View (tube, rainbow, N blue to C red):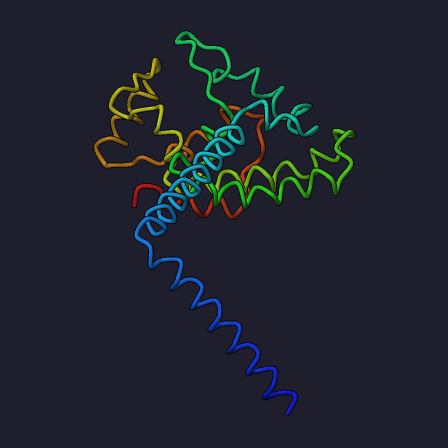
Length: 210
């Protein structure tokens, strides 16, 4: 009996809710207002999410964590991506986060793993960071490789690159001829301190270009 009473109570509540909604939407004006309110809420939610995404891509946000500021950012400042003839200086997210909204949301969600590690290790000791450098470099390199270096190519257009050295010129001519676009397969030590290639990444780039 108690079970039946509970089910009857649920059915009665659902019916009252349905009746209330039915009565509310009898008025066309209420329907228009409800639709307008839904659009406004969804619009504001999207704007807020986009703003959070933009702020989350910024270098200022990334270096608010100690390890990023003390190690990664200092390395970035010594690279040609920080100071160069063109004056172009990408934000951290422009290299490490997808440009499109939903893929960027996914990248930020996956990035919470880095936030957890920030509070799990004592990064004040450089040796602790160096002990994990190779694994962190592998993660970043494989992510870029699996995405065909699309964040690199948002700024760098293959047909517009003009290497100064003959070796670079030949490599880029060959890459364009064969349709190779995965920048990270060759340029894996450009911005941050050099990290040895891992077996997993080495195996991945063996088949570069197909």
